[in-house]
Image (cartoon, rainbow, N blue to C red; front, top):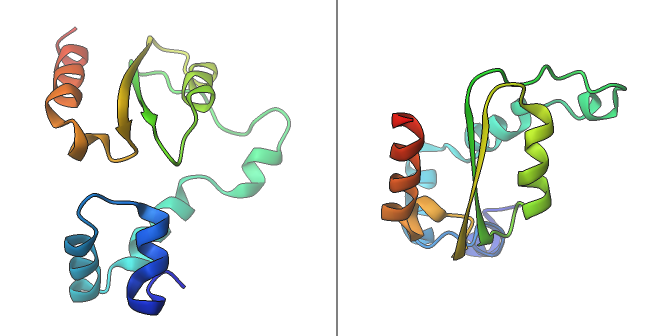
Length: 119
């Protein structure tokens, strides 16, 4: 479905800033299905229905970075991630950029990551 009509659905769904290059790589490598399978494998849907959640908390220090124009994740979802972390939690917000923050604001993302990793 994502590759139909010259990848129009993928372009609308992903909103990737370099969609042409991504599409070329997906076509050349046949990696669309494996790439989507990574998301499918992260969490089985039935785990969300279990009471209490069948997911153990993250014990490692964790940094959550959210961007204010993210199309896939809300700020409440990101900040709510703290409820699933038993180790140290740090939250950072970047305003004015979208879901692909590492491409849209690499210097800011790297600054936050390096600061977190050095702390």
